[in-house]
Amino acid sequence: MRAVASEAPVSGASVEEIPHLIDGGLRPGTSGRTSPVFDPATGRRTGRLSLADVAEVDAAVESSRAAFEAWRETSLARRTKLMFRFRELVDDNAEEIARRLTAEHGKVLSDALGEVARGLENIEFACGLAEHLKGTYNERASSGVDVYSVRRPLGVVAGITPFNFPAMVPLWMFPNAIACGNTFVLKPSERDPSAPNLLAELFQEAGFPPGVLNVVHGDKVAVDRLLEHPDVQAVSFVGSTPIARYVYETASANGKRVQALAGAKNHMVVLPDADIDLAADSAVSAAYGSAGERCMAISVAVAVGEAGDALVGAIRERTSALRIGPGVDPDSEMGPLVTAEHRDRVAEYVAIGADEGATVVVDGRDAEFDGEGFFLGVTLLDHVTPDMTVYKDEIFGPVLSVVRVDTYREAVDLLASNRWGNGAAIFTRDGGAARRFQEDADAGMVGINVPIPVPVGYHSFGGWKDSAFGDTTIYGPEGIHFYTRPKVLTARWPDPSGSRVDLGFPTNR
Image (cartoon, rainbow, N blue to C red):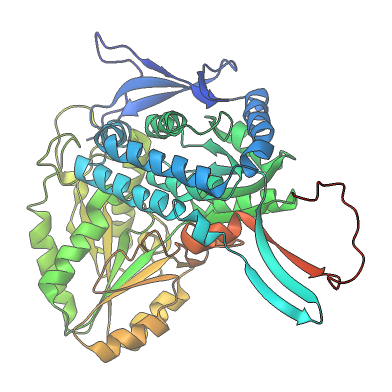
């Protein structure tokens, strides 16, 4: 389990050079700096990613700035047609996108295909831009005066996206932004860049003009330049809480709009009357799917009263049957973690939990795997308390903590006292308790007998407290508001019988 990632490629295999995509074409990096890309299932390096310097970021922004004026004047009909074409290309290439996700992130193919499907929802929402961009109109607000509002694009906007959903999260951003008339610079994660590159290539194939979407790869150098660049009007970000706070503070200090979605510690409350089989199935899927590397994963199961022993027993039974293996294996239900370093960091939390007094019901460190992949078994910790490190930190791995409380009120208070407020769920047969929970839960997204309450593409995604910073939540209606600004016009028209200004147009115009 403690295998270290190999910097060498598999014998006989070539290491792919992964370029930027700027001004409609693939562009090799010129900075001289690169970052390795790994296959988490084998631990072998499969790619070498070019990391942009300031000049390369500037080139991407300049390309988008130059494309903006013509793009903003493009008709809604034309934008819609292109977006529908892009949607069809993504759907036609869903399996290839999923294979790239599995190859560089490690998630199983079924999870990868699910990611593409959720991304498609957001493209479909952007296809309805003509409806989303309608303004308002008041005739005769005063005598002879009409007042109406319209929404205008911002200009060049940027997206900085995480490793855990390298296809879906960019699709939360750039389809809406571009449909609204903006141009976009995407900076994906360095760990799994091939799927975002393919999306950008499909975008070009759909017929969007060069410069409308640019992809520039990089690390902190690229991020900082986007946050300070005077031509970037807004920044969208998804990632950890410390980085989200940094992005928000830095970009807003440079006068930009910011939406920065951050970390989470999602709680699933299980009442004594709950269907324990349903709750246990949901907990296993929500805690261990994608190896727990998702911001909507269930990290804490809150067992109320008598639910505790039955819930822990049912989860433990299910973990023994969970198949962990390479994402390309159709029998695998969970793949490896994204890097060896992250795998080892998650394993350390298991040891910390045991040292601080948690009961280790299932220990993921005991699982054995062949090869050098970044695998870790699933962990179930019982009798976790809010003062423990495993409760307070975002682990972002296949570790589920069970906290036991006596009453519903204690469970709700536990959620309220947690620093994060991304998502929460309750499992119960009691409609009154469920209705009360949707009011009481101190979180931006709430599930009733649904463990991962990620909204569909025509709502919006976002948490509360330390789970989000900035102006709005992301995608859906909030995305349209973020990527546009309102303009209100007040117009008075002269009496038709009065004199008119000669505008120099032919009388039959």
